[in-house]
Length: 312
Image (cartoon, rainbow, N blue to C red; front, side):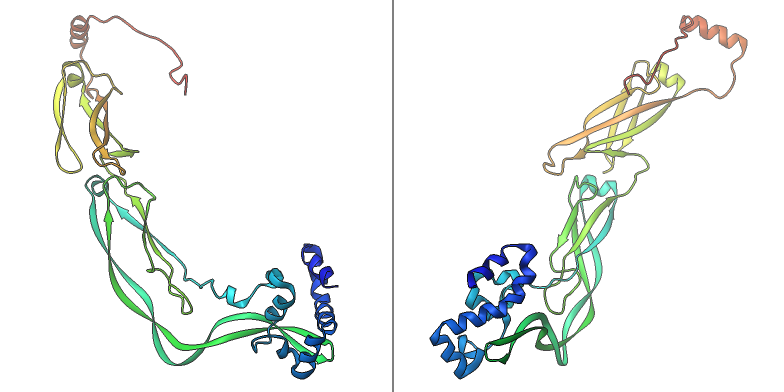
C-alpha cells in the first residue's frame, strides 16, 4: 500500500487521491511495524518522530522520504526564500552634453527605513499541515497558519543623497542600480533602486548610436561659391567646416571622430554628420538679373522626372 501511495504522487491528476489515502498509508505503516506500534500506543504520534513538532511535513517525510515536496515541502526549506521589497525604477533625465563629457548627479531620496518599535508582531507566517489523532489508527489532517513572533517595527522616512555617475557614451534606457535602496520589507530585505537613463532632446544635435547629426543652412551664394564656418560642439570646442566647391541642397559632410564616445571604449568616437540646407533668395529677380544669371552659369534646362524613392 505504501508503494501504491508513492506511485500516486507521481501522477499529477491523482495527487488529490494520494492525499486522501495518506491517512491509510500511515496507519498501515504503523500497524505493520510492531516497534512503531508500541511507540504509538505509548506516546501517540509524537513517539514516531525524533522531535516534538506535529507537522504533516515531518511525518510525511518520515514515511515517504523526499516526496514531501509534492505537498508543499518542508517549512524550513520554504523559510529560505527571504521576502523582498519591491524594486523602484526612476527615470533620470540627462542632457546630451552629459552623455558626451560624463557627469556626477546627486539625487535626494526620501527612503522608508524600518526602525524598532515597542511591542511584538506576527512575522514569517506560513501554512502548515497538522495531523491530529482521532482514535487508534485514525488521523485527521488540517491546514493552519503558523507565525513567529518578532519585535515590532515602524517605517520612518529618512533623507538620503545618492550620487549617480553619468558615464560618457551612456545609452538611452540603461539602468544604474543601487542595491537595497528600494522599498523596504519588514520581514525581509529591501528591494533595489534603479535609475533608468532618459536622454533629453537637443536643439542642435541628434544622436544615432555613437554618431551625431546636425543640419546647417547656407545661402545660395555660399552654396555656389563656398564658405567657412565653425560649429560649437557639446563640450564647447569648435568644429571647423570649409567648402570651396558647390554645395548642393541635402549634401552631407562626415567629420570622423567628432561624434559621441563609445560607452565600452571612450577612446573610440563616432562621426558628426552635417546635412546642408540651401536658402534661396526671397526677392524676385528682374529680367536683366535673370539673363545675367543665365549667361554666368551657362546651364541649360534640365527637367527630369524619376522615382526618387526607389529602393526605399
